Each structure stands twice: as structure tokens, then as C-alpha cells.
Length: 310
Image 1 (cartoon, one colour):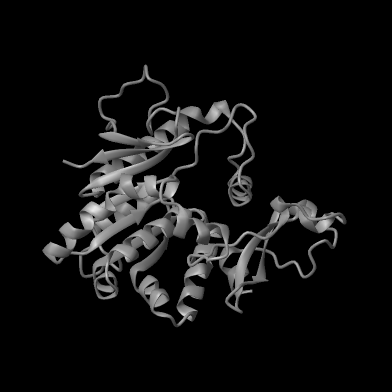
Image 2 (image 1 turned 60 degrees about the vertical axis):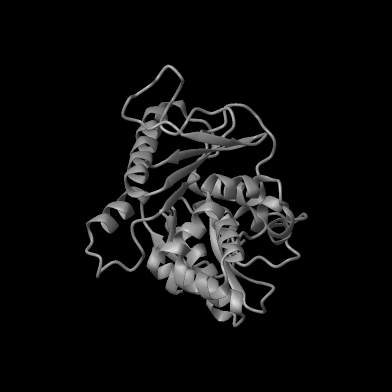
């Protein structure tokens, strides 16, 4: 009820009661592995079907501390050469941490497009596994920024559940992580203009990470993972719409320039492997004001563009 009031959402007592035509998704609660509950988002279509529910219709929630038996939990412990290791390499975490510890300064990372927090989870795991418990609680801060209010609710609920756990690792995560709802450009502007004694998060960030919505797909491609498909459906980014290409490029440039101005060490951006850098619509468009990547860490389908701040 509290969430419904905050977001000005209707409360549906019994999904499947016949009024689904007025909405596509709904928030619900689902039991989870910690004997607690999670706020989840679910497709309204699942309530209409009498047949077996498909993967796209199961509830989606965020788990900042995924259990070892989950797919993400398994990958965190075993993906030594895959996409997660590529992200860690692009961020330069293992090289920057010793520098920060030697100087006695905090390592501050901003994930400005937190979404379902999958990359933030990798960042948390990598940093905390590199630092000692004492150092990590005092020397690491991660801010996750999310502009969509529904997704922000899922993120805040995930952090709530971390706070309910009483093990050492959970306490580390709780002390290091903060969540801010809002547009990334606006959040950076607010933090820059606020006096240091009023800021609730560490600033400026050493590293800024961006995983903006990939350019809309124009051709049929391999299936999108369930949680990402739900996110695309919720945010309305599943299909290509050529009419808004110029506005998307403008938004990308504003985001990149704001991040480039705020970060002190590097900006890292996830892109499709064949796509132009963020804010560039094609190779012929070479705006001198738009920074170009210093180098890239490339995989088979995605790459990470790294902008080193000089």
C-alpha cells in the first residue's frame, strides 16, 4: 500500500479479475530464499493465461546478494574469463584499489544506469573480494542511480533485504551501497552544486559506469533474457523507432558529457560490439565536442568503451 501511494498506482486486489486491459504490468510480492519477501514486477498477461506460465511471465525482482545456486550467483564465482571479468578489467578496479588504499582515500563508483543492478552486483563482488573487510567498509562507496520509479522501488527493496541479513558480507554491502532515484544528469548536477557537508553520498566519483539502453533492434535477434525483456517492456524500448533517433543521440551526449565532467579517473560505457560510441550516430558524425574512447575491452557481442580522464 505504501508503494502504491508513493507511485500513485492503483491497488488490484485480485489480478485476473477482468480489468487487466488498463495495465500491462503490476507490482506484487514473492517469497525468496532468505525466508523473506521481495517486491517484484510481473506481466499482467500471466494472470489471463490458464496454460503453463512462460519465463517472460514469472515475477522479476532484484537480488543484490544472489544465492550461490542462482545463475548470477554461480557466474559471480566462476566467470573468470567472461563478461564479468571484462567489466572488471574495463573499470580498472584491481589497479585503482591499491592506489586509493595507499592514499587513504575512498574508492567511489557511480553506476548511473543501475537498471536491474546486475553490473553493480559484479562491481560490489569484485571490490569486496579485493579489499579486506576493514578496508571495504571504510574505503568503498557505490551509488546506484535509476530514473524509472518502478525499477527504483525494486532496487530499494533489494537493499532493504540486504539490511535484514546479519552476516559480515551483508553488513559490508549495506554500509557501502546507496541508491538514488532520478535522472543521471540531474543527480550529477545536484551533487556537484551541493556543499560537501550536505551531500549524503561520496563525491566526486573516481569511476562512472554507464549501461544505457542499447539502440533499438531493427532486426529479429536472439531472445533477450527474461529480466531484460521485462525491463524493455516496462520502459517501452523493445522496438526500433526511427523518429526518436535524434532525441536519443542528444540524450546520450548529455549523459556522456556529464559523466566525463564528473569522473576523476575513468568513464566506462557498455555498448553492442558493432555500435558506434555513445552519442555518435554513425562514423561520419564526428562532433569534436564528444569525447572518444581511450580504449575498448571487446567481447563477442558487447564491448566496454573506456574513457580515461587525463
